[in-house]
Image 1 (cartoon, helix red, strand yellow):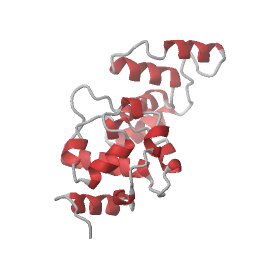
Image 2: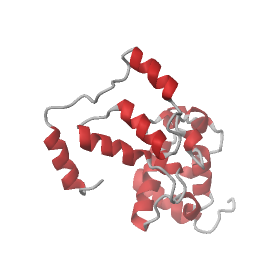
Image 3: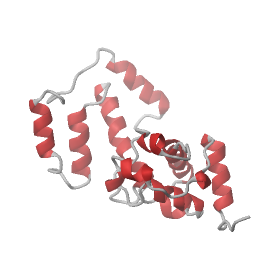
Length: 181
């Protein structure tokens, strides 16, 4: 049997119990990272998240923006030759962070926080403001300005949010789930 660092076995069992995925199956090919749209915004991209789990380094991983930047698009999952559902592992690690009170350090911008704020306020996602808010909070307000202009001209994104008719129902859902998410 190969050597496993202290704490890694327990972490492996926690991830397995939470989402039924084994981070130890990852052999670091990097396909998850090469296709991840958020990898450039991560201190530890997906394959390194898996490696830190294999090493039992949860305390190193959680304060970084890495797992909090994941948008759960599952591109990593689709590309994994080992069939690991990497996005589910990221969810499990975020949940562990919430349980242990280990949130991202100051300056890290959790994408999910901005996403949920959009849904709560508009009843649905407003792509234009999502990108602008994310870039602004990362102190890169002009990062996608050229792309946004092209998308607006082609009608691919909206200048104003599309409203839904039952926005109050969405607000009640958020209130039941914990209010100020």
